[in-house]
Image (cartoon, rainbow, N blue to C red; front, side, top):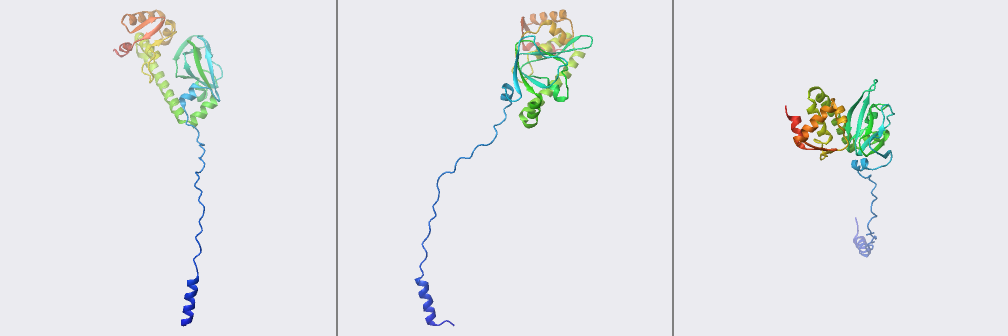
Length: 251
């Protein structure tokens, strides 16, 4: 049991103990340095197809120049920036057929991505033409890594496949007049996402005859008919009016 003297002694000790002074820690109010932006810039498919870079080079051609020939090694894909290209195939007897006319925004030579080691057709320019030549490995890289490019390329490939099917049906079931009207509309880019060109330069009647599988005289007959009806204007260049659709849609 604690005595009275002991209690008073304890109280005197507690009262004599002073609290230690508060220690103030300095605070650094300076702003932290800005973080570096290490993110890779977003992929721009338009810039990719409109500019040169790693694995991409521009090639310019005059009219009627060979871009590549049937049987050449297939080791790149090309993208047409301006101008136009016709694709032709020659059989063993020397007979030539036009299988496609391509323009700005179209790819060619994409067969190398499907395992083709040689070109299956000859590509010849029909006017002053600029193409972006993309190495096969670079195309494969962006197809795997850049969804925007792969989406566009797949959409183009599907549309091209559908076009081939429509061409076959057109050849089998439609008259030469309808086939010519449809070909002119396709060359003028009617039905495409972009605005139609309306003017088709440097496409001869012989070329049109080969494309639709008829004679030049028949093409000349229908071209004169279309001109009289106001569907086209024809003075070296072919100006295609939307009214030409009536020939294709008419039963």
